[in-house]
Length: 343
Image 1 (cartoon, rainbow, N blue to C red):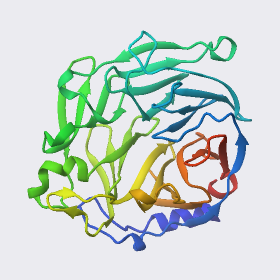
Image 2 (image 1 turned 90 degrees about the vertical axis):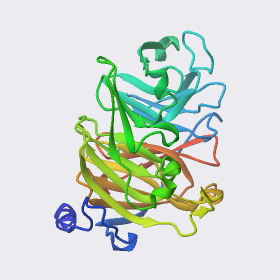
Image 3 (image 1 turned 60 degrees about the vertical axis):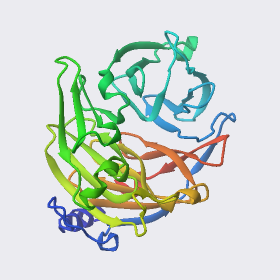
Protein backbone atom coordinates (compact mmCIF):
# COMPACT_ATOMS: atom_id res chain seq x y z
CA UNK A 1 0.00 0.00 0.00
CA UNK A 2 2.82 2.43 0.87
CA UNK A 3 4.51 1.84 -2.50
CA UNK A 4 1.22 2.51 -4.32
CA UNK A 5 0.85 5.76 -2.38
CA UNK A 6 4.37 6.83 -3.33
CA UNK A 7 3.70 6.06 -7.00
CA UNK A 8 0.41 7.98 -7.14
CA UNK A 9 1.76 11.09 -5.42
CA UNK A 10 4.94 11.03 -7.47
CA UNK A 11 2.86 11.32 -10.64
CA UNK A 12 1.73 14.80 -9.60
CA UNK A 13 3.81 17.26 -11.62
CA UNK A 14 4.83 19.94 -9.16
CA UNK A 15 7.52 21.63 -11.24
CA UNK A 16 9.02 21.18 -14.70
CA UNK A 17 12.46 21.95 -16.05
CA UNK A 18 11.33 25.27 -17.60
CA UNK A 19 12.59 27.26 -14.57
CA UNK A 20 9.11 27.52 -13.04
CA UNK A 21 9.26 28.18 -9.28
CA UNK A 22 7.09 26.53 -6.70
CA UNK A 23 6.68 27.31 -3.03
CA UNK A 24 8.28 24.70 -0.77
CA UNK A 25 4.95 24.20 1.01
CA UNK A 26 3.49 22.85 -2.25
CA UNK A 27 5.93 19.94 -2.30
CA UNK A 28 4.28 16.93 -0.68
CA UNK A 29 6.45 14.06 0.51
CA UNK A 30 4.39 10.83 0.56
CA UNK A 31 6.29 9.72 3.68
CA UNK A 32 6.86 12.19 6.53
CA UNK A 33 8.13 10.75 9.78
CA UNK A 34 10.33 11.55 12.77
CA UNK A 35 13.06 8.99 13.29
CA UNK A 36 15.53 8.31 16.11
CA UNK A 37 19.03 6.91 15.83
CA UNK A 38 20.79 4.15 17.73
CA UNK A 39 24.14 5.23 19.18
CA UNK A 40 27.32 3.15 18.73
CA UNK A 41 30.02 4.28 21.15
CA UNK A 42 33.43 4.97 19.61
CA UNK A 43 36.76 6.43 20.73
CA UNK A 44 36.69 10.26 20.75
CA UNK A 45 37.95 10.64 17.20
CA UNK A 46 35.02 12.49 15.61
CA UNK A 47 35.24 16.29 15.49
CA UNK A 48 32.60 16.98 12.82
CA UNK A 49 34.42 19.91 11.25
CA UNK A 50 33.64 19.77 7.53
CA UNK A 51 33.57 16.00 7.87
CA UNK A 52 31.92 13.26 5.90
CA UNK A 53 31.27 9.54 6.29
CA UNK A 54 30.92 6.83 3.66
CA UNK A 55 29.82 3.22 3.81
CA UNK A 56 32.63 1.31 2.08
CA UNK A 57 31.72 -2.36 1.89
CA UNK A 58 32.33 -3.83 5.35
CA UNK A 59 33.77 -0.54 6.59
CA UNK A 60 32.45 2.81 7.67
CA UNK A 61 34.95 5.60 6.93
CA UNK A 62 34.76 8.92 8.79
CA UNK A 63 36.77 11.69 7.11
CA UNK A 64 38.14 14.73 8.96
CA UNK A 65 40.35 16.88 6.68
CA UNK A 66 41.56 19.12 9.54
CA UNK A 67 42.42 16.26 11.90
CA UNK A 68 45.92 14.83 12.39
CA UNK A 69 44.46 11.52 11.18
CA UNK A 70 42.14 12.20 8.26
CA UNK A 71 40.44 8.80 7.86
CA UNK A 72 38.96 6.83 10.78
CA UNK A 73 37.92 3.27 9.96
CA UNK A 74 35.08 1.38 11.64
CA UNK A 75 34.04 -2.21 10.95
CA UNK A 76 30.39 -2.92 10.21
CA UNK A 77 27.84 -3.95 11.31
CA UNK A 78 28.84 -3.16 14.92
CA UNK A 79 30.75 0.06 14.11
CA UNK A 80 33.91 -1.16 15.86
CA UNK A 81 36.83 1.26 15.57
CA UNK A 82 39.84 -0.50 14.04
CA UNK A 83 42.20 2.40 13.33
CA UNK A 84 42.95 5.46 11.28
CA UNK A 85 45.20 6.55 8.43
CA UNK A 86 46.15 9.48 6.26
CA UNK A 87 47.91 12.71 7.15
CA UNK A 88 47.95 16.14 5.59
CA UNK A 89 51.23 16.56 3.73
CA UNK A 90 53.13 16.07 0.51
CA UNK A 91 54.54 12.58 1.05
CA UNK A 92 53.78 9.65 -1.28
CA UNK A 93 50.85 8.52 0.89
CA UNK A 94 49.76 11.92 2.21
CA UNK A 95 46.75 14.07 1.35
CA UNK A 96 47.58 17.76 0.84
CA UNK A 97 44.08 19.27 0.75
CA UNK A 98 41.18 16.81 0.54
CA UNK A 99 37.53 17.74 0.15
CA UNK A 100 35.77 15.25 2.42
CA UNK A 101 32.38 15.73 0.75
CA UNK A 102 33.69 14.31 -2.53
CA UNK A 103 34.47 10.90 -0.99
CA UNK A 104 32.84 7.90 -2.63
CA UNK A 105 33.12 4.12 -2.56
CA UNK A 106 32.89 1.92 -5.62
CA UNK A 107 34.15 -1.55 -6.59
CA UNK A 108 36.32 -1.96 -3.51
CA UNK A 109 38.09 1.41 -3.67
CA UNK A 110 37.54 4.82 -2.13
CA UNK A 111 37.84 7.92 -4.29
CA UNK A 112 38.29 11.44 -2.94
CA UNK A 113 39.16 14.76 -4.51
CA UNK A 114 42.27 16.61 -3.37
CA UNK A 115 42.53 20.25 -4.49
CA UNK A 116 46.22 19.79 -5.27
CA UNK A 117 46.43 16.18 -6.46
CA UNK A 118 43.09 15.63 -8.19
CA UNK A 119 41.03 12.48 -7.59
CA UNK A 120 42.87 9.95 -5.45
CA UNK A 121 41.89 6.27 -5.25
CA UNK A 122 42.50 4.36 -2.01
CA UNK A 123 42.43 0.62 -1.38
CA UNK A 124 42.01 -0.82 2.13
CA UNK A 125 42.46 -4.56 1.44
CA UNK A 126 45.37 -4.73 3.90
CA UNK A 127 44.00 -2.37 6.48
CA UNK A 128 42.20 -4.80 8.77
CA UNK A 129 45.25 -7.02 9.27
CA UNK A 130 48.18 -4.64 8.77
CA UNK A 131 46.63 -1.17 9.15
CA UNK A 132 48.03 -0.42 5.72
CA UNK A 133 46.48 1.29 2.73
CA UNK A 134 47.46 1.88 -0.87
CA UNK A 135 46.94 4.90 -3.12
CA UNK A 136 46.27 3.12 -6.39
CA UNK A 137 45.92 5.96 -8.82
CA UNK A 138 45.47 9.70 -9.16
CA UNK A 139 43.47 11.54 -11.82
CA UNK A 140 44.91 15.03 -12.17
CA UNK A 141 43.21 18.07 -13.66
CA UNK A 142 44.83 20.94 -15.60
CA UNK A 143 46.26 23.75 -13.48
CA UNK A 144 43.83 26.15 -15.15
CA UNK A 145 40.88 24.31 -13.57
CA UNK A 146 42.30 24.25 -10.06
CA UNK A 147 40.86 24.69 -7.53
CA UNK A 148 37.76 22.86 -8.75
CA UNK A 149 34.62 23.23 -6.62
CA UNK A 150 32.02 20.46 -6.23
CA UNK A 151 34.19 17.84 -7.93
CA UNK A 152 32.54 14.59 -9.06
CA UNK A 153 33.51 11.63 -11.25
CA UNK A 154 30.97 11.32 -14.06
CA UNK A 155 32.76 8.25 -15.41
CA UNK A 156 36.05 6.51 -14.70
CA UNK A 157 37.83 9.14 -16.80
CA UNK A 158 35.61 12.26 -16.76
CA UNK A 159 35.83 14.78 -13.91
CA UNK A 160 33.13 17.41 -13.51
CA UNK A 161 32.82 20.43 -11.23
CA UNK A 162 31.99 24.10 -10.80
CA UNK A 163 34.36 26.62 -12.43
CA UNK A 164 36.03 28.76 -9.81
CA UNK A 165 35.36 32.44 -9.33
CA UNK A 166 32.66 33.06 -11.91
CA UNK A 167 35.05 32.63 -14.80
CA UNK A 168 32.40 31.21 -17.13
CA UNK A 169 28.74 31.74 -18.08
CA UNK A 170 28.22 27.99 -17.70
CA UNK A 171 27.92 26.45 -14.25
CA UNK A 172 29.75 23.16 -15.00
CA UNK A 173 33.16 22.31 -16.38
CA UNK A 174 33.98 18.82 -17.62
CA UNK A 175 37.45 17.35 -18.13
CA UNK A 176 38.23 14.11 -19.94
CA UNK A 177 41.43 12.66 -18.47
CA UNK A 178 42.06 10.43 -21.50
CA UNK A 179 41.61 13.02 -24.25
CA UNK A 180 42.59 16.11 -22.17
CA UNK A 181 39.45 17.78 -23.53
CA UNK A 182 37.82 20.55 -21.46
CA UNK A 183 34.26 21.70 -22.12
CA UNK A 184 31.57 23.68 -20.31
CA UNK A 185 27.80 23.21 -20.04
CA UNK A 186 24.76 24.16 -17.97
CA UNK A 187 23.54 27.76 -17.83
CA UNK A 188 22.99 29.24 -14.39
CA UNK A 189 19.32 29.40 -13.29
CA UNK A 190 17.35 32.49 -14.27
CA UNK A 191 16.59 33.63 -10.71
CA UNK A 192 18.78 36.70 -10.21
CA UNK A 193 19.74 39.69 -12.32
CA UNK A 194 22.75 39.33 -14.57
CA UNK A 195 24.24 42.33 -12.73
CA UNK A 196 25.16 39.80 -10.04
CA UNK A 197 26.77 37.48 -12.55
CA UNK A 198 30.20 37.87 -10.94
CA UNK A 199 28.96 36.12 -7.79
CA UNK A 200 26.68 33.52 -9.43
CA UNK A 201 29.21 30.85 -8.48
CA UNK A 202 28.65 31.82 -4.81
CA UNK A 203 24.89 32.32 -5.07
CA UNK A 204 24.47 28.89 -6.66
CA UNK A 205 26.98 27.11 -4.46
CA UNK A 206 26.04 23.42 -4.55
CA UNK A 207 26.83 19.82 -3.82
CA UNK A 208 26.47 17.16 -6.48
CA UNK A 209 26.22 13.39 -6.46
CA UNK A 210 26.48 10.81 -9.25
CA UNK A 211 24.00 7.98 -9.58
CA UNK A 212 25.96 4.75 -8.93
CA UNK A 213 25.13 3.40 -12.40
CA UNK A 214 26.67 6.62 -13.84
CA UNK A 215 23.64 7.52 -15.98
CA UNK A 216 22.71 10.73 -14.10
CA UNK A 217 23.91 13.22 -11.53
CA UNK A 218 22.11 15.68 -9.25
CA UNK A 219 23.12 19.06 -7.81
CA UNK A 220 21.52 20.59 -4.69
CA UNK A 221 22.10 24.27 -3.87
CA UNK A 222 23.12 25.46 -0.44
CA UNK A 223 21.64 28.98 -0.43
CA UNK A 224 18.62 28.41 -2.67
CA UNK A 225 16.20 25.58 -2.03
CA UNK A 226 16.52 24.02 -5.45
CA UNK A 227 18.11 21.14 -7.30
CA UNK A 228 18.80 19.96 -10.80
CA UNK A 229 19.11 16.46 -12.23
CA UNK A 230 21.26 16.03 -15.34
CA UNK A 231 21.77 13.14 -17.68
CA UNK A 232 25.31 11.85 -18.01
CA UNK A 233 25.81 13.75 -21.28
CA UNK A 234 25.11 17.08 -19.55
CA UNK A 235 21.52 17.61 -20.71
CA UNK A 236 19.12 18.92 -18.07
CA UNK A 237 16.48 16.40 -17.08
CA UNK A 238 14.72 18.17 -14.19
CA UNK A 239 14.92 21.44 -12.30
CA UNK A 240 13.02 22.00 -9.06
CA UNK A 241 13.08 25.47 -7.48
CA UNK A 242 11.22 25.62 -4.18
CA UNK A 243 12.38 28.66 -2.21
CA UNK A 244 14.71 31.67 -2.34
CA UNK A 245 15.61 33.57 0.80
CA UNK A 246 14.67 37.16 1.52
CA UNK A 247 17.30 39.82 2.32
CA UNK A 248 19.85 37.61 0.61
CA UNK A 249 22.21 40.42 -0.37
CA UNK A 250 24.07 43.24 1.32
CA UNK A 251 25.06 45.68 -1.40
CA UNK A 252 26.69 43.61 -4.16
CA UNK A 253 27.60 40.66 -1.92
CA UNK A 254 25.73 37.87 -0.15
CA UNK A 255 24.89 38.98 3.37
CA UNK A 256 26.58 37.49 6.41
CA UNK A 257 24.82 34.50 8.02
CA UNK A 258 22.42 33.52 5.22
CA UNK A 259 20.07 30.56 5.37
CA UNK A 260 21.63 27.23 4.51
CA UNK A 261 19.22 24.90 2.79
CA UNK A 262 20.93 21.80 1.41
CA UNK A 263 24.17 20.25 2.63
CA UNK A 264 25.58 16.77 2.18
CA UNK A 265 24.01 14.67 -0.57
CA UNK A 266 24.38 10.90 -1.06
CA UNK A 267 22.78 8.46 -3.48
CA UNK A 268 21.82 4.92 -4.33
CA UNK A 269 20.54 3.69 -7.70
CA UNK A 270 17.01 4.16 -6.35
CA UNK A 271 17.10 7.46 -4.48
CA UNK A 272 18.90 10.72 -3.73
CA UNK A 273 19.35 11.52 -0.03
CA UNK A 274 20.07 15.12 0.97
CA UNK A 275 20.43 16.84 4.33
CA UNK A 276 18.17 19.91 4.55
CA UNK A 277 19.19 22.36 7.28
CA UNK A 278 16.78 25.21 6.52
CA UNK A 279 18.59 27.33 9.12
CA UNK A 280 20.99 30.27 9.29
CA UNK A 281 24.69 29.46 9.32
CA UNK A 282 25.11 30.64 12.91
CA UNK A 283 22.38 28.28 14.13
CA UNK A 284 23.61 25.04 12.57
CA UNK A 285 25.29 23.76 15.73
CA UNK A 286 21.95 23.29 17.49
CA UNK A 287 19.79 22.71 14.43
CA UNK A 288 18.10 19.36 13.89
CA UNK A 289 17.83 18.98 10.10
CA UNK A 290 15.53 16.90 7.98
CA UNK A 291 16.67 14.23 5.56
CA UNK A 292 14.88 14.49 2.23
CA UNK A 293 14.66 11.59 -0.20
CA UNK A 294 13.94 12.09 -3.90
CA UNK A 295 13.90 9.65 -6.79
CA UNK A 296 16.07 10.13 -9.87
CA UNK A 297 13.14 11.63 -11.80
CA UNK A 298 12.93 14.46 -9.25
CA UNK A 299 9.86 13.18 -7.39
CA UNK A 300 9.61 13.58 -3.59
CA UNK A 301 9.67 10.27 -1.74
CA UNK A 302 10.21 10.87 1.99
CA UNK A 303 11.13 13.50 4.55
CA UNK A 304 12.61 12.35 7.86
CA UNK A 305 12.85 14.69 10.85
CA UNK A 306 16.05 13.77 12.67
CA UNK A 307 16.56 13.76 16.43
CA UNK A 308 20.12 15.09 16.39
CA UNK A 309 22.23 17.87 14.95
CA UNK A 310 23.59 15.71 12.14
CA UNK A 311 26.81 16.84 10.47
CA UNK A 312 27.40 14.00 8.00
CA UNK A 313 25.73 10.80 6.82
CA UNK A 314 25.75 7.97 4.32
CA UNK A 315 23.22 5.33 3.37
CA UNK A 316 23.60 1.64 2.58
CA UNK A 317 22.94 0.66 -1.03
CA UNK A 318 19.90 -1.40 -0.03
CA UNK A 319 18.24 1.79 1.34
CA UNK A 320 17.84 0.22 4.77
CA UNK A 321 20.32 2.00 7.08
CA UNK A 322 21.59 5.56 7.45
CA UNK A 323 24.80 6.17 9.42
CA UNK A 324 25.40 9.65 10.85
CA UNK A 325 27.68 11.82 12.98
CA UNK A 326 26.50 14.57 15.34
CA UNK A 327 28.03 18.05 15.29
CA UNK A 328 28.51 18.07 19.08
CA UNK A 329 29.41 14.43 19.86
CA UNK A 330 32.96 13.07 19.49
CA UNK A 331 32.46 9.49 20.67
CA UNK A 332 29.41 8.10 18.87
CA UNK A 333 28.14 7.18 15.43
CA UNK A 334 24.40 6.86 14.93
CA UNK A 335 22.38 4.45 12.83
CA UNK A 336 18.85 5.07 11.61
CA UNK A 337 16.93 1.99 10.50
CA UNK A 338 14.54 2.93 7.68
CA UNK A 339 13.99 -0.58 6.32
CA UNK A 340 10.37 -0.73 7.48
CA UNK A 341 9.60 2.83 6.40
CA UNK A 342 11.02 3.19 2.93
CA UNK A 343 10.93 -0.33 1.50
